[in-house]
Amino acid sequence: AQTVTQSQPEMSVQEAETVTLSCTYDTSESNYYLFWYKQPPSRQMILVIRQEAYKQQNATENRFSVNFQKAAKSFSLKISDSQLGDTAMYFCAFMTAGGGADGLTFGKGTHLIIQP
Amino acid sequence: EAGVTQFPSHSVIEKGQTVTLRCDPISGHDNLYWYRRVMGKEIKFLLHFVKESKQDESGMPNNRFLAERTGGTYSTLKVQPAELEDSGVYFCASSQDLVRVGELFFGEGSRLTVL
Image 1: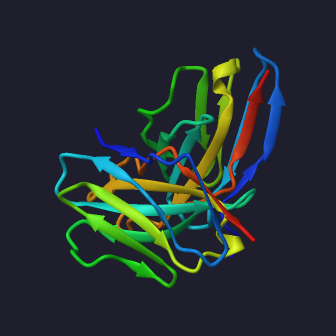
Image 2: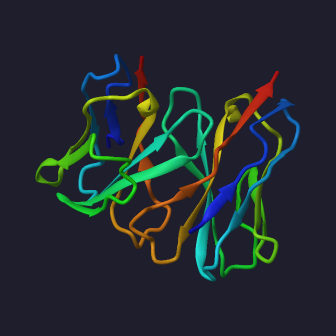
Image 3: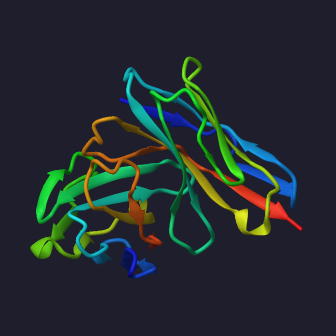
């Protein structure tokens, strides 16, 4: 069974700062996918960024980038030039390459607060 | 195009009562998942429908939970009788197919509070 650990229950930074959310996981699989999801207050959870385990290059989506360290089983999310709208719960998630009927394995989440 | 919608957004019931949560997936999405997040814990998988069939219900906590998906469209999750530990946020997600990994579209969740 896979596990995903997010060790930071809550983080708070000033607007425009850079913040890094940590995520570690444990699996015996060699081929899998990792995700960061974001749920703003009273809003739907949306996919922020995705990383395929077989790709060495770190995924990037505008201000969001990841630091994927496969050997260390680490998958951190960096948000550059943070904005007030980035305030949300962030969930790290894992999925085996086959998709898996059980969908995603999530971490407990990190509540990120961007202060003006 | 409408996203995944869930109803109600919040339900407060007493222990022993019954609650039914509803999820309308994105039209055309065969895969529908239910997840639950108990406060302070991970989001946990409950079950997975492919069209109207239960593909995997290994995450259902016990027989007080019953999920259905009528005609492969909307799905309901009934809790009867509700217990205190059932409190949490119930998320529904849908996807067109498993090949598009990660393309799960989530609803806003239904918060259940059992008193």
